[in-house]
Image (tube, rainbow, N blue to C red; front, side, top):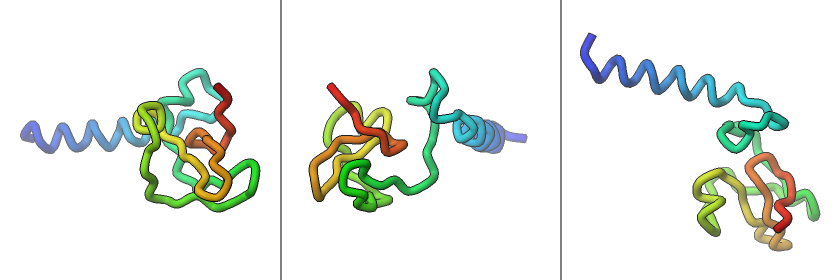
Length: 81
């Protein structure tokens, strides 16, 4: 096998392992949320393709509600700071 095939296989395995990280884990910021989220305040469905509004959203996921402006993480929980 050449290096490209090995790299693809390793990438698929890592993607699968990251998808197994649970929301309540201490490694939750590394996890992947495959389900669609809703705003916790106004229950507005968030878009699948998102445009990050800051460095934290770009690195760890998350969204800002277009309707009410609430900032949430990739699991749909409100971010307070």
